[in-house]
Image (cartoon, rainbow, N blue to C red; front, side):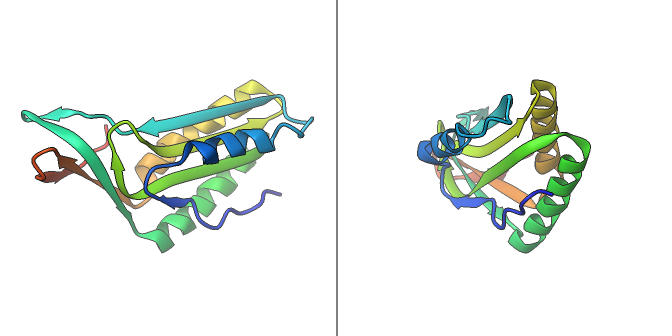
Length: 146
């Protein structure tokens, strides 16, 4: 049975220390043979002649955490995972900063890699998380995930 992680949201960018600590904590686990991680970073996209400076993330936290718990259970049931960690930013994250971190562990690489990929796609498409792209001129638009 997997352990439920109560809150995946971190205010602002995901600190490098969170990523490093997550990796380090698994060094004593001799049953794990593979880790897969995904880091989402804010791009300074050009949109209609304007450059994205940052993204402000908002969410429906209660619904997002309910959906995340369901996704977590489904992924654990589908893949032979030892661990799963997910963090997503809320609030302002500037271009070049990390906004999304997914970390999966398993005895074998394919389970860790496939679970990580499915997690990223499902979180991006199923969780009520919205990004408002803020341009250098302070104008903004709602981000559309491709």
